[in-house]
Amino acid sequence: MLRFRRPKPPKGFAKEVDAARRVVARAIAAGQVPEFHPSWRKGEYKREFVAAQHGKCGYCETYLLNHPPAMEHYAPKGEVEALANEGVEADGIYGVRDRDTQQISRTGYHWLAYDWNNWLLACERCNTGWKRSLFPVREDPHPCPPTPDQPYTALLLSPFGVDDPVEHLEFSVLGEVIPRDGSEYGEATIRTLGFSRRESLRNVRQGFAADATQHARGLEQALVDGKLDIAQIHTEELISLGGEERLHAGMVRSIVLSRLGLHWSQMEELAEKLAASTPPHTKDPRLAVRRRARGQKQ
Ligand SMILES: [Zn+2]
Image (cartoon, rainbow, N blue to C red):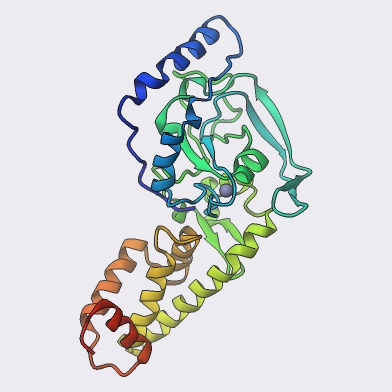
């Protein structure tokens, strides 16, 4: 998972969803379970999030292009569920087997149903298959039914959250994920999204994880050896792999943090320093190709 900059709501958004919001508020005031008008399906809204998320699922970082994205409510608008059994991926990428979620409240965070800040785009697999109406919080038991004046600490990481998911998730060279340093946010997120139960996801991550690990090791060794031109090659590869628009860039950044102890902004600084310090007459052909691409002298 990678942190993105939340898009701004389109002009007139608050007015457009106001009627639907009031219908929900009236139902709650009458002690009923509200029905929700799916205003969030509007193409214009989705387009804003597709651009902000570079066409990727906000949770699993796979591309949304091959299946219709769902507007995901981070805090569930309707019922709230608790996870009873994590289950496992089955029948290819769409199936989920033995995942058991149980309702703990008939009503959820209904006042956030039309809140732009509660929305993100997620793939159907994350949205419907794994996350469902789960919303882990630190409080135990989960305050239910949720009300606007009841404080809570959400443990599910978000691509638009305050906490950087990179700081809470750690990945192996095989693309397996665990909580970083026992992070409770990391653990709750992995369980809620089934991240460690989805072999297809690990399979896709594996190649990127191997590349990132290899370049991180190469960079470390090159810096130890004082070979700045080689260090620059590995740095540029990592910067490319961890680019916001790239698949599993969040994982690549997590691997950089684990292997090199560098946060992404530090990695970018290192790339700039190396680019400025590497002599332009290096003989390494890979670097020469890059220089040509950037229009620099050999
Ligand atoms: Zn997803």
